[in-house]
Image 1 (cartoon, rainbow, N blue to C red):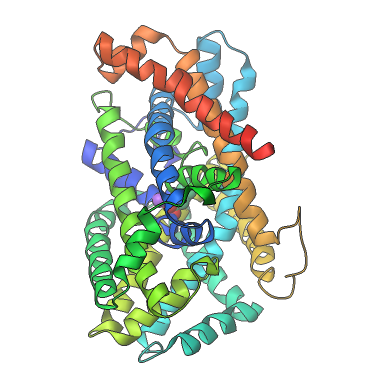
Image 2: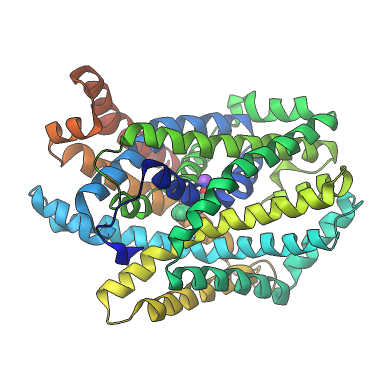
Length: 447
Ligand code: PHE
Ligand code: NA
């Protein structure tokens, strides 16, 4: 995509699809549900929703706004924009930490993408048919215990990503994304409908929406904020890069609202699909990263038409994971391509192999390296935590502070199409509410 510099999205719709393709992924279904489960349910969900609206939306708009002005990759965009506005060049650090975060995230994202690929094939051969929680649990634990199996699927997933990115065919995926999103929503509705037949739907709704505020802590709030960044692909310069292809006539605020609503609806539906199954089968919501892989196959194994629905579901999940993974590899490739003599194919191969290697370390942490710990976390959790809870919020904070404090106010007002009154409200949000929100969460967590 980098090489299309100055090309523009053919329409607002195309742009929404590309941004949604990056946003909607494993984060909505796999990560959202396991985070909700691990962080006690409703209190997490409500804080997450607040973070999406008060921090996520302004940062998404800020990243697009900066990207559209810069018309380059995130690092050069930040350098240019800083210079034009008489600010220190050090602002390009935002671009650099974004590239780093994307690299780290992709390594473990690909491992989970591999699980999804594996489950797609298992669905085809009817592995889940008639399964109970023990047999489905054993299947999952068997996969985790086998470095060879994990390696095979991680490699297969990463190979797909590399091939797509190397060929630069990302634009061809837009039409696929267009049909995938509605299909995903419909399938989640069917699954939530299945949840209603389990007799534990009410319990799941209460778990997700009736908060016990006593469960709230600094680390729950930080996890919720991290999830908001992760799910919206923020704090990595990815949305900034996308913004550089955006036409001047597109309204950033309403576009951001569209993408965010879609992303949030899919995540909430995922929760409503998964938790009834958890409660109906006496499973623990705090299962961890395996949550959807030990719950959804139970539903597919025991519902009418489950084999085919399961196949479609894991296929869609894999596809959603691929479109996100492509956007995660792109910054690394773009940087190698523009800052070294490597051509696109070589840059993609080198970047892909580096990510793959780190992913191998992540997958080994589920078995032979389970005892290896960094700051008390195994390698997988370490990568997930450091990126979502630290790098993304800090990089996102940088982008919004820059957009709110360093850009010419009047031009921003015109660009966002605000009148004076709405603009004052917007300014309060981007100058104070969002940045102070992020900072407060950090300080609370430190104490
Ligand atoms: N937003 C994606 C998801 O929810 C993950 C992602 C994060 C993609 C960061 C790109 C950048 O799955
Ligand atoms: Na998402």
